Image (cartoon, rainbow, N blue to C red):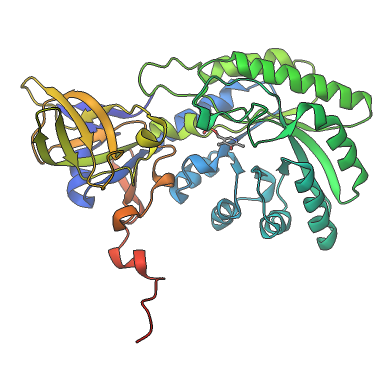
Length: 415
Ligand SMILES: *Cc1c(COP(=O)(O)O)cnc(C)c1O
């Protein structure tokens, strides 16, 4: 599943002891494994073998340039949700025909930039956006490649904050309005209809919701075909879950099997947009114990990482395994692993049985996705370093931010 293993009694990232990374780069820091990223990308690519397909890694899960570069070199395409993410890919010279652009709130400048870079498709999420894309394209004298994001109204059975395919969510065009939206798009000469897409949520642990969404989309696809629409690609979005604790998400191959069965004999290219399932287990957050604070109610282990690096526990009550880098012999006790930030919600794990001493290193697992990208400067904490391990090599993928950079664009009052 990943390339973080114990060797000689201590946790390694591929061939590198995490202790050495902590010594050389300080803590907290994120450590990524290139081999794990590659393995997970290939699992999706292989899962769709035999179907014309494209794996579009969801950049928002982890947008570090080194991570994007690893995937770009494997031939990955990309799903973006902002002009900022587009600019990252441009910095890596990723061609527009490997990029799809999702998101409910694309601004004019973002649409302009996407069209100038000749993206493969804009995944349009509302009628209002459709009109705006047509206007911007007409002003540029080009045709915008458009795919409509349909909200299939299926329950992804995941945390409410990361469910996106229900009627009451802000995402996509309702199924009942979809036909009218395609007809409207066909009237706009500045648009070229290339596809249909959906993305029903994140951290899905069952295939049922995907199969349901796919059937609904195919029904719409066939209705459109009967009206003479000739779409080229069907994009099923991302969302496949990973095991944080005891979840048993389906393997990419099982998802691929559902797609292969449902799409057999159809002439279309299938796109998928996995993010978490590629990057999640490819990273961990390395942190050091500052203080042990046993109290009458609870034992707190105060570490140097915080909700500013990993917001998922406090945002979604998410579980992340927390491992000692060098396990101790003695029996453990239960600890709440908490950060230094002034919020009671600043915790990384609760009631973890661990034998701890101040100065010990801990690794918070499955922190490759929705971790560094969600970090903040709260409490004037600088962004931490990110390292990408490749065999025995350690690549500094992001420097620890110098403190003064945090307020560099702030101005005290004039004298
Ligand atoms: C977030 C997102 C994804 C990726 O979701 P994961 O759960 O990380 O696989 C894919 N497509 C869209 C449109 C998204 O917003």
